[in-house]
Length: 107
Length: 117
Image (cartoon, rainbow over all chains, first blue to last red; front, side):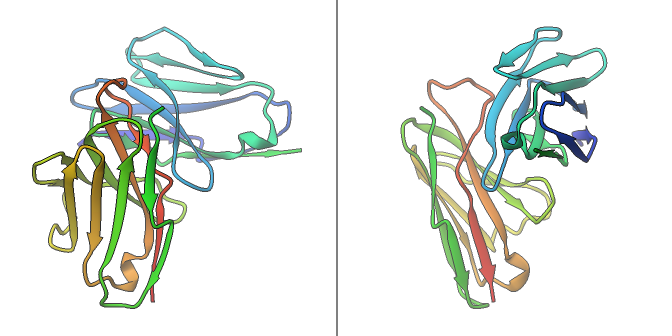
């Protein structure tokens, strides 16, 4: 059975801080790892990672995959209150989601 | 691009009634659609996968007779919760993969909140 574990489960920071969210996985047939941001409604797509060591970047967000360690990190620099959300990591063609990291950014 | 809509956004119904939720891909053809359920403070749990024109594949523990899924066209899938009970109250989200999009990426609809009284 595929397994995805995220850490930490919850994180509270102040605006301007940098955060690193972790995702580790155990899957029988790895194809890709995806990061999503979920606010009040359904998740919105952030990144899809398939190759190890190649950083994907979008503004203040970046992510990288380490296939040797079976893990990925999502970095957010200079956090803003609008970054407050649940960040979900998922793997596989039929997505298996981690439990999510709840990020709260205080002004 | 890659917009997925769901209807309705909210539904409140009495116990024993059936509720139909629609999921539409607005600007692409969805070859595969997925239905998830999310309880408060929990992650998304995949319920079933449906390919256009064929029967849905249900995850273990999901009753196919209770959660009827129809994927009749490349832009529409429906989930019907039959004889809904209070324990079926949840946030139901669909997602879609399709023609012309990155192969592994799923695009999510805005979700439907179901409350069964």
